[in-house]
Length: 122
Image 1: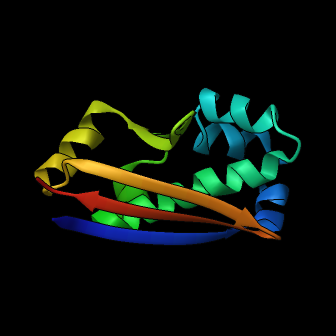
Image 2 (image 1 turned 60 degrees about the vertical axis):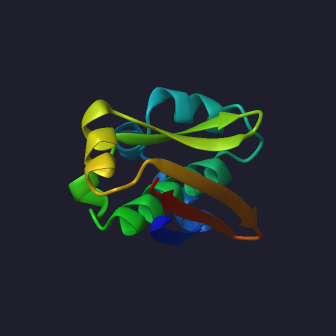
């Protein structure tokens, strides 16, 4: 059963300006995300999709970005696609809201990065 759905669109050009500020990068993203983005040809594209993923998850859960915590959730890129990683408290909060699984899809085209999240309950 679907427990929540969220989507978010982030302008890559806006993120490109934002990530010029090292404080912003370190406040929002974890080391794993920073390393991944910086290892790619266009880092802002990957920062934007990771940011959109957080926003989409916050909408799917109803917690909001600050209710969830900025660095409590991050995106890990795997061979099977992107997945969310989260601290124990956030994981427990999602389970308490009936979400047993979390599905994430990311894409980018032109100046936009899009994230789509589906929360599933058993």
